[in-house]
Length: 84
Image 1: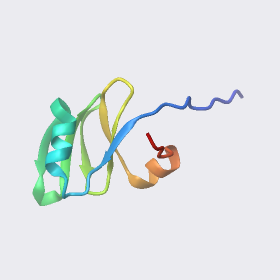
Image 2 (image 1 turned 180 degrees about the horizontal axis):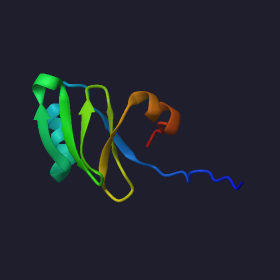
Image 3 (image 1 turned 45 degrees about the vertical axis):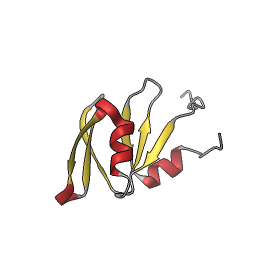
């Protein structure tokens, strides 16, 4: 069976802390769908449809400018934070 390794790709990301709502909304631009304050959720338009993010999730901007949420534990296993 063949194996493959993900190519290193530099992505932009922002953690949604629940206190940086305006910053996150502006960064998402047209990908922002809505806030669900009673559920502590943020809805993001992704390539797969509307997906909810929870406080503490990382919002990733993909290589084609698309956005999607990522749970912190998955982010830690998948990405290495670099200095610019």
